[in-house]
Length: 243
Image (cartoon, rainbow, N blue to C red; front, side, top):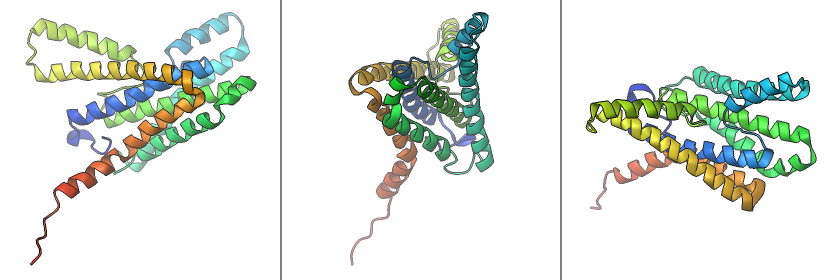
């Protein structure tokens, strides 16, 4: 899912990463909003809130929103720095960003309830989610060669609209490359919306323990390649017959 980069990467690899991490992003967006009343997977809405707070001369809220936007940027910067420092073609260069995501989700699971007692806690937890979503977005973008982005749908809907128009103009579903891109956009949108629905539903019943679901998704992503390698080796191992 993550190991193959560049020319070694196939459409199937992108579908796998798009499915899993769009689910994760959608879940985080819904559960994060219900948990902290903040959108936590993109900065588009925060730009509007930032401008509105500036006009109202609410300097404290403006600083907090600006910090949240910078944290998303910082997450993308750190993820890119880690990937480039280790080397994109090195095995398991994606492990550190995914482990950092898992740690943040676990901390929110354990201490998220403190949001009800402290406004500062809300700002910290919301900012932490924005940071790791920036990390995830940069990680997926780099690994997939900018074919997949999973933390927001604005660009995905735009790309889908353009590609559907191209497909309609050609009136030819056999245009393999274009059809695959349309299918990939649809998978991302469906995954994000499904994750958001699951996040809203499970947060209603499990409260902050619902953030264990993203932990499970990311652990699966971490070990997917390892499991797949062992399974392939098992089925392709030479058969030793007794004498």
